[in-house]
Image: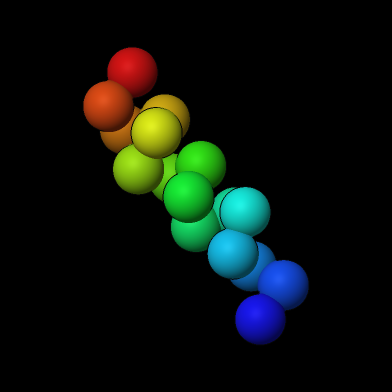
Length: 16
C-alpha cells in the first residue's frame, strides 16, 4: 500500500 499518497492527490487535482 504505497499508493496512499498518490490516491489522495488524485481527488485533490480533480478538485483544482
